[in-house]
Every structure is written in C-alpha cells, then in structure tokens.
Length: 112
Image (cartoon, rainbow, N blue to C red):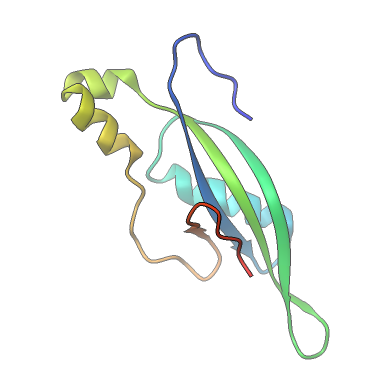
C-alpha cells in the first residue's frame, strides 16, 4: 500500500468515504478529509465498495471502505517527547462528518 522509508513507522487507519457521484470520488473524499488532520499520507487501499439505492433503483450514495497509510513523523515525536508527539499525530479529527465525506470505521466492522 505505502512505500516506507528505511526505519519509518507507518500507521494504517480504516475509513469509509462517501460521495453522491462515484466510487472514485468517495475514495478522493476519504483521503481529502483524512489529510486535514493527518500528515504524510502515503497510500490508500480500497477494501470494499457499495452503494445506496433509492426506490426507483437509482444509485444515490457511493461508499468505499478503505485503509489509509501514513508515515509517523519522527521529528514531531522528538520535539515534544516521543510518546506525546506520536500520540498527537495519530489523533483523528472528531469533527462532524459532512454529507459527502468520510467516517472512521471500527476494525472488523463493515459498512452497510
């Protein structure tokens, strides 16, 4: 998924992205929203995709479950004390999810 530097630490989180337009846009939304609070994103792996369908058979919401990999910034960890610096970088924004965006998915849980 992500190309790692020698000795780098890579964190992987699982997210669900959505879009009213396409599966590709759902992936782009997942990465875009994650990049607001996570630096050094290096890769995305789409695990599954599904869509919501309205009463007329029209696809209304495209969803993708994906894993996003990012390199943990050693410089941030070193400047604030190793554990505290790494913990700050691994935090994910708790801001409300927009109508088309991304939601964090607990490990092992599949979106509907």
